[in-house]
Amino acid sequence: MPGFTLKKNRWFVEGVPLSAVAEKVGTPSYVYSHSAFERRFREIDRAYAARPHLVAYSLKANANLALVRSLGQQGAGADVVSGGELYKARQAGIPADRIIYAGVGKTNEEIRYALQEGIRYFNVESLPEMQAIDEVAASLDQTASVAVRFNPDVDAMTHHYITTGKKESKFGISIADVDDVIETTRKCRHVRFTGVHAHIGSQITSTAPLKTAVAVLEHLVQYLRQEGVAITTLNLGGGYGIPYNGEKVPKASDWARQVLPAVKRLNVFLIVEPGRYISGNSGVLLTRVLYVKKSHAKTFVIVDAGMNDLLRPALYGAHHEIAPVEIRGKARVKVDVVGPICESSDFLAKDRLLPVVSRGDVLAVFSAGAYGSTMASQYNGRPLVPEVVVRGSRVVVARRRQRREELLTLESAEKL
Image (cartoon, rainbow, N blue to C red; front, side):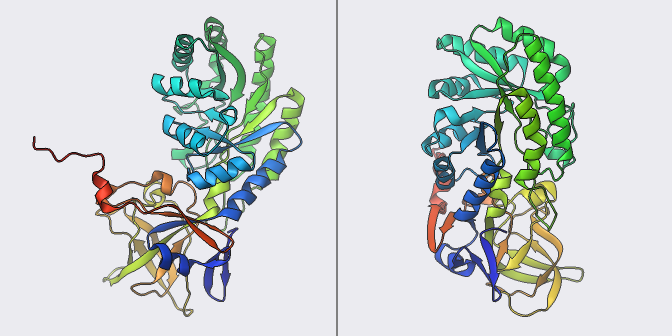
């Protein structure tokens, strides 16, 4: 993983031992490599440098304010899916004209807020949403710029929970309904339809689905232009996969090769919306061993991080590499790494060969920079854990650990 190295049986994040980070901030905690975030962003930005483009970082993957600010200073925009993410992007200094607002369920209040902020445009997911944007824009005497998210019916060949481009998906509008889209937008006096958007899924590990989707969208843009719709922007979403378990995945340049020829032929401004590709392998979750429990059938390594901190294994059966931050000895044992949550689905790994560990040892759960902290909850009354950014030898607590008393911040104990 970029930013994380093993030196003499000790894991480091940039110039700092992970054991030192655990000692400073405690566990569980998320730890990010600043250089890894920036390196991955620059890799994508350079891959598309041949054409006018915007890399709009997807906040749903990792919305840490310090990291979003840093990416914005490098020239990144933001892909947001809620009013809360829009607020975070603006607080992080992302210019409004670099912000794309996506998501299938935008409320009128969120639409109004986005228009008042002056975002670049909305990715529209349905015709009723188009009409709602038109109505809100009219009430503000504004014109809203939109790109329509079309569903190209392309199988991204990824987990079914994160496949979004098939015809049975809730996302986007069927290409078969393109004439209805044209008719609806012509009736909307406060909407400017100038973009086509598609996002076929997440954690895609082959360029073939994107190549197919781009071919479909190129024909779609040509048709729209023939019908008098001045399409100037093509947004191809994100979904670029990362290695979780040693898989060979495409580089940013590999994805770009599937995209740039069509972009050149169409002469459109290109937008891509990577999230996981930038953040996934740029972060780890540190957790401490509480107990090693041996039963007749299993050995359980019980740690202080649970499914409330990292949901992906329980939700998707996702694989994350796990290792002690300080490796002692070569002996390995097959274990389940499980958390403290009162659910049988609370595990980080099952039947995993790991070095022998003892109570108090710290483990690193790798590839946890995407959809880790952003999906965390307070289930079982557990405070949210800190997020730490390491830059060189500097360790910065970018989000402190939530205090137990803060679990009650929004509640009232008044007698009913």
